Image (cartoon, rainbow, N blue to C red):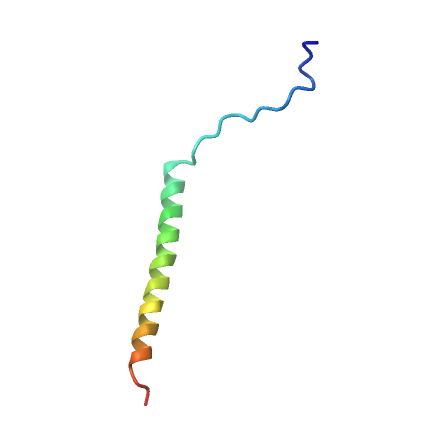
Length: 52
């Protein structure tokens, strides 16, 4: 009755990714948001400037 062959699999404990990987992801995400913000700013400025 103590057969462990049909026991449910327990996943090993997970560890967070290394610090460098987290920083790289943070700066990639931050960089894309920064570029998107700049594009939105330019778009807003050019919408106010009358075109000739």
